[in-house]
Length: 378
Image (cartoon, rainbow, N blue to C red; front, side, top):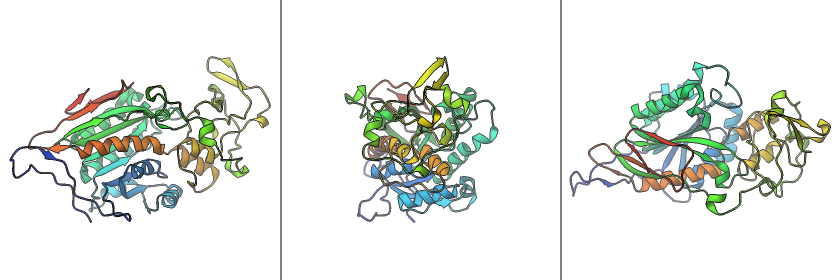
């Protein structure tokens, strides 16, 4: 097992911060040395695919869902531990890694469920994430979640995460990114929390959009994402009935547009563009203009394409489980953009004898940007 990262002042110039050079991780099959990543709540591997494509080595992964772990192994070529992160935290041996990533379950703060009642148990996954970080002491961690984490229940979960990160020894920046700005064919805004060890001086730059007005390039549309997929098999499409909640939004977009958010719950999956349009009959009410037999949701494979998952990516289980694995995934192109920013930050980080500073720069004015600890926001 590789040794834990050590950073010390240069012996030739005492007290002067040196360039941060983490020890090389275990070599991969292609002989390239990469920073080691431990992935918590790994799901079916969307975030991990993004980090791997940015040049990181996924050395450890864990998730508690059996079917999801099978899907992860099939797509990542790495067998994850199939158990709760809390069990991992109770074992004596700790994982050694350079970066910890993960998206703790967000049902307690999601717009799709859990909004009416505050559930104290919803905080447990966040607590376990930071317990792991505290023990492993990676140079950096990246946590992904829904944007509602910042505001729901007075931001109590968000404050818990910031406090836990600081207590674990990290300066933290948080920001929201829309997957559509990074070549994903849906409007999907997610919160990222990135922490670096307090002893490090780090310059972190938010990812610059690759698509949309800021990039001077059109968005990746539904037509772009589904090109060449063909008609789905009948068992790949959710045929469940439509609940009243489904009609509170216009869940149909045109071929030339971005998709509505791809959720984990198959009954909430948006309509395919070949479905007839919906008619607005109230402030938050839409209705079909033709019999429901003319409407169909996206198949789980189409959802995977709209999430930016690669062709040939496989889900495991019945159609509900497959939709869930796809909908819970972090779009890999979005994850890759964040991973590249982390990689650049670590490559130029330095450590001295005192506390370090996390300087955050943005190539544009983000809608949400904040920090905790010794953080400077440009």
